Image 1 (cartoon, helix red, strand yellow):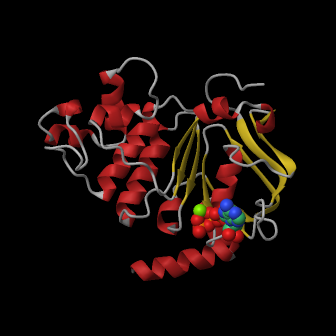
Image 2: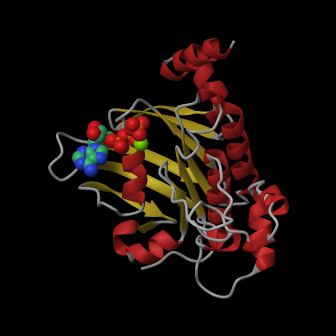
Image 3: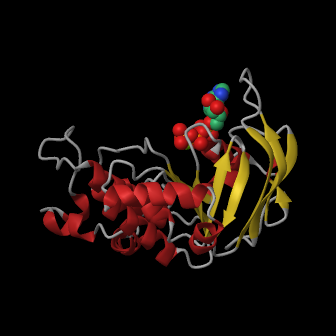
Length: 257
Ligand SMILES: Nc1ncnc2c1ncn2[C@@H]1O[C@H](COP(=O)(O)OP(=O)(O)OP(=O)(O)O)[C@@H](O)[C@H]1O
Ligand SMILES: [Mg+2]
């Protein structure tokens, strides 16, 4: 089974439960979540709440023990993991930094077929890292990283932008950022989330962050607590509800004032 090409209609987590092999207790317990086409959803919650586990289950690094995860109505268990992963562009916290040329770095997102410089430049532009190429003497051929003589070393934030260009270059229909921006200042993180949202164009976006100031731009926010969804709604709905999200948001906001 496979899902048709192009943006997917939805991703649904249907009453799923999961415990890690050898793990203590359920990492995910009776969790339900339906994400719609074109939606940017943010997952927030304490360390160990189960946010990254949800992503790993979607990618089929593990399979759920109960319930099912469906993409466009098709159970991920019926999909070939390679095909499934080819549809998903993901950026983890420990994103890879490839010490290659700028062109090769971006193409890593989809290393098949001929180099298409126009497409590479577009991805760099969409991730606002075009300046990177302009500042270097050899354009797309410029080497980044210290391995090469004459290689340009990049800052943590610059590597992350290049990594963002990589998932934008890839022809993926689902984009996931699992705290890849934690080494950036809050303003830069907010900018990256905004760029992702702007470029979604019917794709589904899932972002994970501990910063409430940046997750607020998501269409909906899910508060994960001990493996299930505790609160779900827009930033304004959750603020008005006056529960966990509102409390944590106020707490962080007071820190910035
Ligand atoms: N490989 C593993 N084996 C056993 N238990 C694990 C494994 N990975 C995670 N866990 C446990 O599963 C639970 C959920 O972890 P998860 O990584 O999903 O949390 P998280 O919400 O992403 O937290 P953080 O904000 O710290 O990234 C935790 O109790 C964690 O200890
Ligand atoms: Mg995590």
